[in-house]
Image 1 (cartoon, helix red, strand yellow):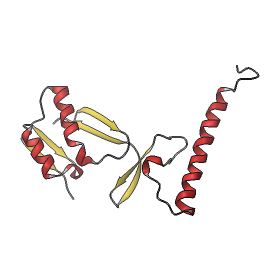
Image 2 (cartoon, one colour; image 1 turned 90 degrees about the horizontal axis):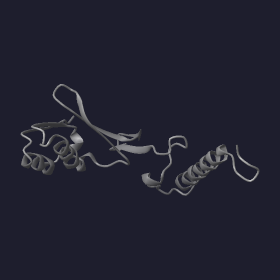
Image 3 (cartoon, one colour; image 1 turned 135 degrees about the vertical axis):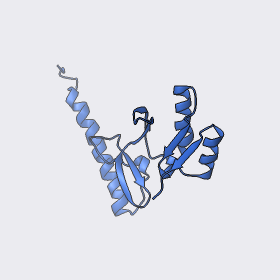
Image 4 (tube, one colour; image 1 turned 180 degrees about the vertical axis):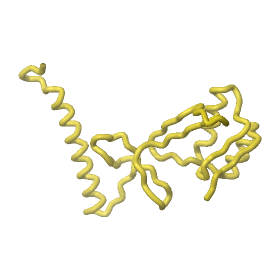
Length: 140
């Protein structure tokens, strides 16, 4: 129990949420009143889930959450999961993801099927150089 000169545990949570609310008001003022762009890294989109990231899907849509990369085997069993903060470009994640597979299983996979966001000639060349025989990038 909090003493006469000690804040109760709830007071700390309240102060924290009031700080977040103040930051949200400030960012809204910057965007709406001043017409400024607020970088995604500075935005607060939820005072209850403050760690939520803004995931931009090109000019199509904005999502909220975190990027999750799943690696599955040919039986569809999930072999690895990687949760990243922010909105890193998929095209920059091929090497780290395949390196993780090599670290976990002692070799690169024989095949890789990836979302179109991973597609680049550099990524294809790099994967082939590591011994990945078949590489497929899904595109619309």
